[in-house]
Image 1 (tube, rainbow, N blue to C red):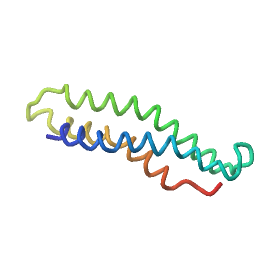
Image 2 (image 1 turned 90 degrees about the vertical axis):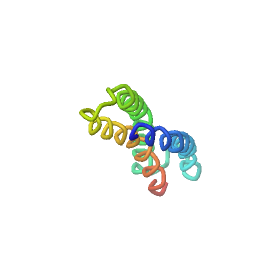
Image 3 (image 1 turned 30 degrees about the horizontal axis):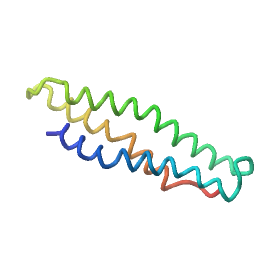
Image 4 (image 1 turned 60 degrees about the vertical axis):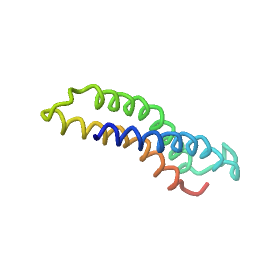
Amino acid sequence: MAPTVATVLGAVLTPWAVLLAAMSVMATDGCGPDDCSQALTTALSLIYGTLFIGGILTTGAWFAAWLLPWTRRWSVLRAWLAGFSLLPPVLVLVMVFMLPAG
């Protein structure tokens, strides 16, 4: 059950996270790429780093949640992995919406 829920939520959250992360670079339009605050450039670096590394972790956790045996013994680990697979896209969305001023 948990991998199914994670798959549905991931199918909604991941494209939005990628789209909004790609659009977040527009936060530097007002200040130019060289005159922006250090907080903004650090936040953008964290967003793109989380998107890249988090994509690998999300994929791995998602596959592991689906590939574990479907027995009661593995149900808790499967639920944790399914929940963990949603963490990077949610984290990227939170960081995009909390960008500091340029």
